[in-house]
Amino acid sequence: MSFGHGDADGHGDGPECYPLRMETVTRILATTSEISLKGGNRRWFERTLTDNVRSALSDLPVSAVMRPSWRILITFKNPVPFAEAARRLATVFGVGSIRAVELAGRTMEDLQAHLGPRLENMAPDSFAIRCQRSEKRFPMTSPEIERVLGAFVQEQTGWPVDLSNPALTIHVLVDEKGLFTWTHSVPGPGGLPVGVGGRATCLISGGIDSPVAAYLLMKRGMRLDFVHFHSVPRTDPASLEKVEGLIRILIRYQGPARLAMVPLLPIQEEIAAHCPAELRVLLYRRFMLRLAEEISGRLRSDALITGESLGQVASQTIQNLRAVESVATMPVLRPLIGLDKPEIIAIARRMGSYETSITPHFDCCSFLLPERPATKSTSAELDEAETTLNVPSLVSEALDSTDIQPINEPVGWGEIPLPMGVSG
Image 1 (cartoon, rainbow, N blue to C red):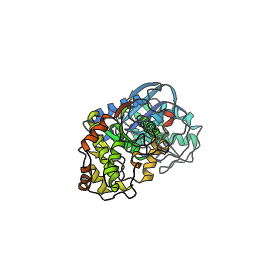
Image 2: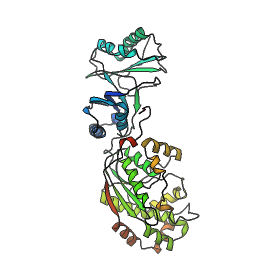
Image 3: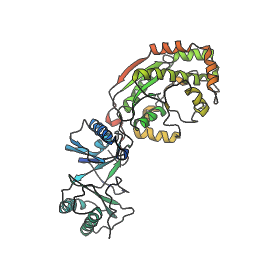
Image 4: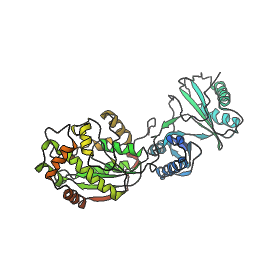
């Protein structure tokens, strides 16, 4: 009888449905995500990820953070709540899974002695053994370990084996540092470590979409700064505090950022006075891109990020996106372009920004909103509308009134959701 499928290199844990209590841990094994597929830059990616892990766990009693092969082994000086360690690791892009592990010795005898007492408090309907062996000098192969350990567990407990959908999976990792076991794994955020993908500037509002767009580009390794356009005093100054609150959530995922607050009201008033009403929002957005590009130069960014999703509102048709973007010389990245609103909301909930985003606010683009906005504009049409404006002067005046400030203090960890599969 077989008790598992030997897998020397696999990183996944398979199905798990047996309820487990993991109140405190002294060791966590975090697997990497895409990093294991990298070539010549892999070591740099791994170092960056390790540094980000250390930063995220800086308020916990970490003893060591080691980086063997495709995983990171974290040891703590004292037991720590698994929920709190997992919450922090779930903000570290590049982490594939988070496992509460125990060191079970170096021999099969050690492994059996370690596992025996732990079986007494469990009563699953079925079980399986999964083994990964990165230490090839160990005298048994993965399938052999699975068979021997599976026979031991069955002899001790009488539990039936189920390799397709076990209620409990006992995992073993054969490593140069010893034999590690675990029975539960929770998902990490995946992606690439922040810091390996360059720098970009995100146009952020107080809504749901733009924080999610920022999160998804951080997940691709980018480090972000932010630009917010406001219409104070014609809109509520509280919206500025709301945006700062959203960025304080986002910097939990990347570290400190800079926020440029740009007054758009004089530009909006000029557009409302001199340009066709149906083009107002599109002209607002053209000025936003011009201003964001100028600010990005100061911040040394390589791209702009927006929260636009194709067809979500009238200004986000493909024709309008093209007409608005025609004034930009930098790449404009739109990570939400193909997502539905429910998908965007699900990400916002997972990252912890949703509740802040849905608090009422008056967006600058809602100011002087036309009754029937254009849905199929052209860049030539918008160029023509702007001939009635002194574009360079309006841009210069807005930049002169722009306030750039550092955002260094993230929200408390309690405002970051626990990863799926972990209860507080």
